[in-house]
Each structure stands twice: as C-alpha cells, then as structure tokens.
Length: 249
Image (cartoon, rainbow, N blue to C red; front, side, top):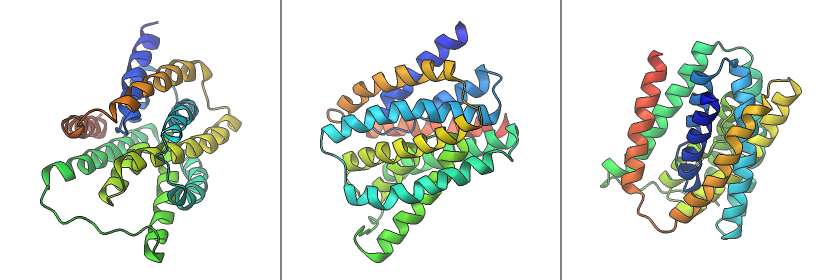
C-alpha cells in the first residue's frame, strides 16, 4: 500500500511538472526502480503504457489551445516511431545497472540543457530554420534519436524534445505541444511492443497514468500564468542530482 501511495504522489507531482513541459518523466520511472522488483524491460514497458495515457491527455489539452505545429510533427513523428522499435530491441540486451546509468546520464544532460539559457543569458541565439533542407534533416535525425531513447527507457520524449526545441528558439508553447504530440506516438508504439512481450504491469499503469494525466491540467494552466525561469532552475538541479545518484547507485 505504501508503494502505491508513493507512486501515486510521485506521478501527480510529475504530471504537474510535465503539464508545462518540465522534465519529469524520470520521476515515476525512478519510483519503479526503487520501489518495485520489476525488471528493466517491465519498467520500460509499464512506464511507456502509463505515459501513453498521460501524454495523449496532455496533447489534447495543447491541441485545444492551438499550440501544435503540424510541420514540426510531420518531421519528428515518423522517424521517432521507427526509433522506438530500435530502442525496444536494445532494451533486451542491457543490464539493470546499465539501465540506471542510461537514465542517469540522460537526466544530467536534461539538467544541463535547462540551465544553459539561465546561466548563459548573453550567448548568441542559435539560428534554426525548420523549412530549410538542413533544418528538416536535423529534425528527422533528432526524431529518430528521441524515438530510440523512448523505446529504451519508456519515456515519451518530452524531457528531450522541449529543451532542444527551446534551444532552437521554437516558441515555448509550441515546443511543449510538440513534445506532447511526439511523445504520444512514441509511447503508443513503444507500449504495443512491450505488451506483445508481456512486459507491462497494468496495476502499476493505473497508479501512474491517472494521477499523471489529471495533474497535467494544473501544469497546462500554469504554463500560461507563471514565469518558469526559477522553476526550470530547480528542475535542472533536481535532474543533475538525480542523475548523479543513479550513476553511483
């Protein structure tokens, strides 16, 4: 019962953070790592199925507010779907220790990405044209990379997509909306692959997906009312510390 309660609380907090594009997908995953005896494959599969329900809900919220960019989605989604299947395949070959290391490294990278615009306020903005050939090719390869990570770990890709698009000066709300939409497709195809393997624990899906999805409404509203610079700083430090802990765990 304590495990269920902690997972519920962690997922609710993660959902609020995810609602405004924060890097929170690792919170429930870390909860599964430390609170359950699930294998790495079961963790990835359970997380992916949980996040599909949650990200679909969040994507609808941002579609409702008109923040999606269809051109971005057309370039990111197809290669991301292919990447998820590669990631699922790779997952079958990694050990629990290596899985923790991968999660830790990604968390640290995300923390650094979030800190970059805060600490380096005088850096030259990166010029990026999503309509150019170079821009399109970059987005396609980025979508493939995000898909591989999504399939490997079970995350949808929001924590990777949003910081990257912000660095390329895509509008914040468009970045968040794109993250949700791509993550919905990623988690759908990832969860299908893991369900076929019998690697999804549906009891845990309920405890993660429901609070995560509902809490996103709060984050969605916050995204339009609050200056999240300080919050990004806190999230960045949290990610770096969490990643560091997982690397030595």
